[in-house]
Structure formats: C-alpha cells, structure tokens
Image 1 (cartoon, rainbow, N blue to C red):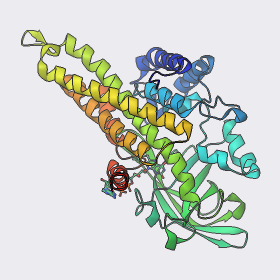
Image 2: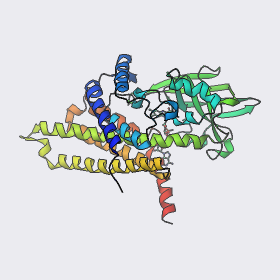
Image 3: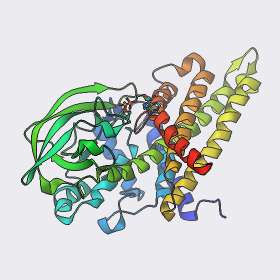
Length: 384
Ligand SMILES: Cc1cc2nc3c(=O)[nH]c(=O)nc-3n(C[C@H](O)[C@H](O)[C@H](O)COP(=O)(O)OP(=O)(O)OC[C@H]3O[C@@H](n4cnc5c(N)ncnc54)[C@H](O)[C@@H]3O)c2cc1C
C-alpha cells in the first residue's frame, strides 16, 4: 500500500496552490461581480493558467485535453477551493468544461454540441431539478412525448445554474413516468433558443450563485437530440453526479484547509486578557478537531478518487465523501469565523463568505440526508 500522492500530482498540487496564493487570494474579495468573475479578472487568470499548463485538465486527451485522473482532479479542486474568489465551478477558469455526459454523445451530436464547447464557442447547462423533484428525480413532471421524429417537451425546471450564459440545455425528462428513475428518465439536448423554452425567473442564493427557472411549453426537440437510449437518462446523469459529489467534498476540504490557515494566524495575533487567544485550550481544541477531520477526510477522498480511477468504486463511497467533506467544510468555516470574533462577520472578510458557501455545499447536488440514506442502505446490506 502506498499512501503518498504520485510525484507528478504532488507537483501539480503545488503549482495550483501557488497559483491560488499568488494570483487569486490577493484579489479574492473583489474578483467577482456578483455571480461571476469580472471579465478582465477572468482574462488575466485564464492567461496565467494557460502559461502554467493548467488548461483543460479534465478533458480526455483524444479531445485535446490533459485527461487528468479523478485523483488528479480532486487534488486540483481542493486547492482551488481554498479561495472564495472564484465562481462555484472555479475550474471553469481552466478552460472549457464539458461535463462527462457530453463525451457520451454520438458523432453527429458531438459535431453540434461537444466540439463547439471544447472550442469555447458554446456553453451548456444541466437541467434536472424541478419544484416537485429535487433530491428525488423519480417524481419528475417534465415529460417528453414522442411524436414521429420529434419529442414534445413540457415541464418546469428550477434552481438551474449558468442559464444566462448557456447556448443549450441538457434536460432530464420523463419519457415514461410510470418507471420513474428506474428506466423512465431520459436526457435531451435542447437549444436555448428553441420556441417554447422560456426563462421565467432568476434568484440569487446566499452564496452569490444565480439560478434560473425555465418553462418548457410544447417544445419540439428532434429525436436525434436524445442522449443514448430512451430511459437511460438517470444512469448517465448519475455518472456526472458522482463526479459532482467528489467535487463538493473537495470544496469542503478546501474551506477546511483555508479555515485552519486563517484561524491559526489570527489566533496567534489576537490578544485578549493579556494573552493570544491561541493560548486558550478552547481555541486549540477547535483547531485540533478540524485538523484531525481534515486529515481523515482528505485521505478518504483521495482513496475514493483512486478507486474511481481503478474502476473499483462502490456506489456509497462518493456519497460518504460528500457528507463528510461538506459537513467538515461548514464546521471549519464556522469555527474559523468564531475565532475571528466580530471581524469574522465583516463583509470584506473571506470568513463570512466561506461560511455562506460551505452551508450551500450540504444541499447542492443532493442534500446530505439523501446521501446518508444511500449509505445506510449499504450498511444494512453489508451487515445482514
Ligand atoms: C446554487 C445552486 C445551484 C444549483 N444548480 C443546479 C443546476 O444547475 N441544475 C440542476 O438540475 N439543479 C441545480 N440545483 C438544485 C440542487 O441540486 C437541489 O437544490 C438539490 O438537489 C436539493 O433539491 P431540493 O432543493 O428540491 O430539496 P428537496 O429534495 O426538496 O429536499 C429538501 C430537504 O428535505 C430533506 N430530505 C429530502 N429527501 C430526504 C430523504 N429521503 N431523507 C431525509 N431527508 C430528506 C433534506 O433535508 C433536504 O435538504 C442547484 C441548487 C443550488 C442551491
């Protein structure tokens, strides 16, 4: 057993860390214009990232990317998550970011959707959540009914990110409602400007993210825009969601790491009752707990990513990463804010932004309670 990261990933981790420390952390509280990077900041960061070879890391080599392993991605994600200065999908600054589902398209679909994304000409977004179907996609009400060589799409989605910048939507819909998520869901590629697609509303979340609501009203979608086979939508979406769960866990790890950095520094500087607060056992124990949990979580996330690369992953493992990593992130951000006292609540400080961001990690891409249900099912099977 070798618990060390391979040399090339240690170097990659160091490169990303120094990029974040030098280029992003100094401007992190001013880099964003509400939900996205200011255009001039994005241009400068992209240029620097390219120079450092941090470009299209997760795109397979046959498509011109670097084909980084899941372990490699995890290492990059946790380093990026140390800063609050990037939009939620921070790695987007490292080049076009097609989601894995787009690599499953047939050649004709790739020509129209994947390659333009890789060239930076088009952007996509993923539409699954609905008012009555969030963590439980099986109860989805958006339907696609086949009529000749088209599907007629009707329904309503909410909490969808990046709709403002997207050119097309990857819409999860019910092609057979009686089967729910067990073979009843499919994914359609829908151009945003198709008649009947209507963005009805947008809302800001407390983390600064902007999400949208979209109505589909008798939208005619060519059958050739179906991804894979009818009814295989959930299986395809799950593959992406597995990656998303590890991503959310890494965001928690990054926040925990940064919380330790900030809290240790401040607690040594801040003197109360004649002594630095770092001398107080109450503060030391908070930091010791976060440190222990961070070490354990990081090891488990690395192992899970490694097992994903070996194709030996069990379904519950990324769920465990998501629960532990995101709860750790929030606990760490909370302790860090507490140690900073009133200063921690100041809007110019990263502490309050980390706290708000980390609270969101426990809900987006699946609430932790639903993750625990999946883990519990595994426990009951494993110990029967
Ligand atoms: C910033 C942001 C961006 C998003 N972007 C997208 C996007 O681009 N595309 C997209 O499709 N979706 C997106 N979402 C939606 C997100 O994935 C959902 O909010 C999430 O899956 C939870 O669904 P819900 O909000 O409907 O909660 P629900 O499923 O209604 O759950 C509400 C609460 O009930 C509890 N609960 C639910 N089920 C169970 C259970 N089985 N056992 C115990 N407790 C349970 C949990 O505490 C949960 O938090 C985004 C959300 C946010 C906040």
